[in-house]
Length: 68
Image 1 (tube, rainbow, N blue to C red):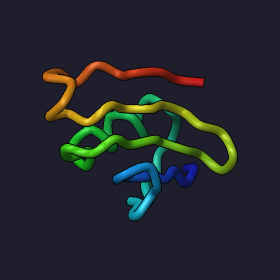
Image 2: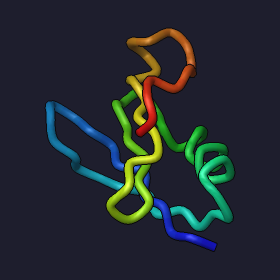
Image 3: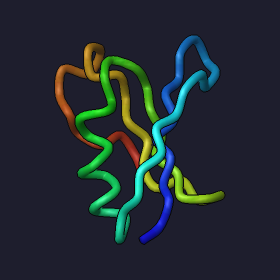
């Protein structure tokens, strides 16, 4: 298991994160989905960004914005 963090962004800066334990990136992304809410979020494992998500309310869907 690895530790992932889902950071929530508001007005340009991160203000909160949720810690997730997952076996791999795909599981971490699945666990992050219900935690996203209506804010921009980024999923990280240590210093590696796994995914970036647009705000759900603004995007109108749940597609992943980008991953590095």
